[in-house]
Amino acid sequence: MKKVLDFIKKIYTIVKTWIVANGIEGILGLIAGLLLWAYGYKIYAGFAFGVFATRNWDFIKGLFKK
Image 1: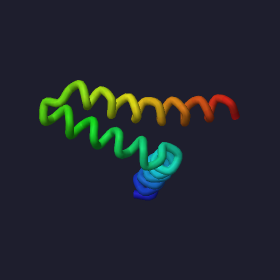
Image 2: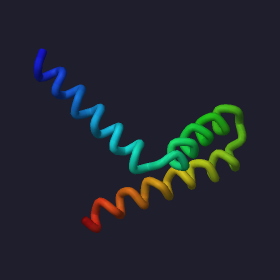
Image 3: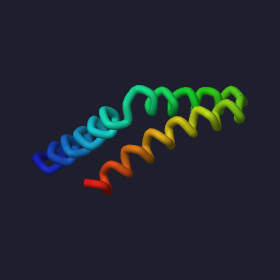
Image 4: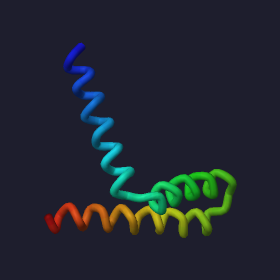
C-alpha cells in the first residue's frame, strides 16, 4: 500500500510541476484545442494546439538548459 501511495504522490508532483511550469496559456491552449477539435473547428484547434506546444517547448528547453 505504501508503494502505491508513493507512486501516486510522485505522479501528483510531476503533474503539478508541469501545470505550474506550463502556465495558464498552455493549459487553456490544450483545453481550447480539444474543445475546438471536438466541435469540428480543426483550423482553430491547430492554433490552440500551437500555443500549447510552444509553452511545452519553452518548458522542455528550460529543463535542458539547466
